[in-house]
Image (cartoon, rainbow, N blue to C red; front, top):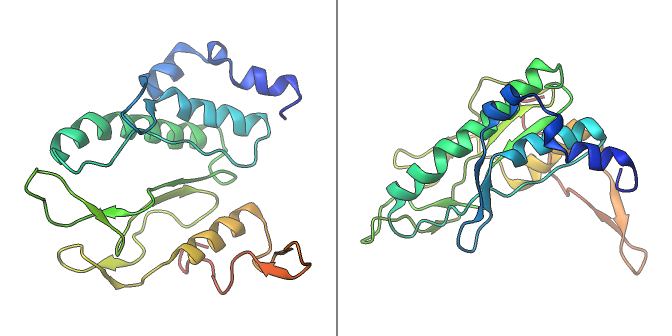
Length: 200
């Protein structure tokens, strides 16, 4: 893909009908502090790259580290993110690609359940949520739950290994796949992770 004209074609958004581009929106192409741009065209580029043959596309969106003014930060970020992500998912369904493309939206961790004295929320690694769509997975449900104040998992806890096992399943990669380290020792890619029950 990198050496073919398909990449250049995929990156040319002028080929998209104006209505599709409007659905995704533009967002903001400038970097947000030490974060990434809130560029909604990246969602559209992701779809085009998959159509061109990319097996995996990753994009960063904005900066969600709202240690102060959490409400203002979310008001500036969330609507644009929602527009781009929902447009991508709808577009994949309309093009008949939803069963072949899995979308995973999440962060590296969550935020404290209590607002700090600056009106923000700090780092919190004990509970995190994410959204999955497509990939032939069973959609329209919530897996797991949190405690009443969203502090810790309260049931159906899913960890990173289970998430990756689910992604491997969608990609058609055997869960037992391993690679050899420099000394020739096989290193399992997933350990004991199993695909998330209820999704496959």
